[in-house]
Length: 187
Figure (cartoon, rainbow, N blue to C red):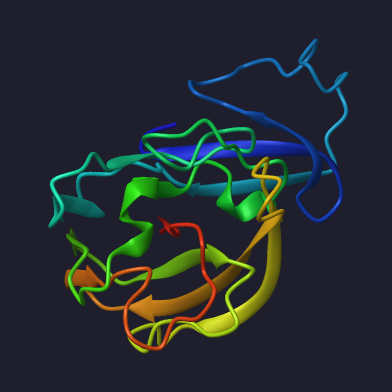
């Protein structure tokens, strides 16, 4: 309804099979969850012009602002997908990056305008023994499995940000050790 979205889950605590509404629903009978829901996530619509705009990528490679989804891709140039994740990420704003930028050492890999305060999640290569110095995000302890067999899962870091232009640095910027995959972002 309006600019809100609802994701219902079969199990408690936003777990189990999700069922997302893309339009108003007057009857929940006969859905793919067998008419049984135990928890729900309600949030502002994922792609909102009032949230993220003006995406600029210094390499000129393709990045994309879209809805996040379990089973969805997270790069614009690869078919790797998220196998499973916390329900709060389902349908959130996702910035898909380009895996070719994994060797970028700059401090301005891409930027976007954040029009209101929000929590930014950085999904980073679990093989890294240290993050780039520009990553001043908290470790959430989340591990998000991926179909990339070499990496197995992303470690998730987060920070709360104020409105304005957000600039994120290179995956391989100073301080990074042993990260072999590009990160992606969820807001």
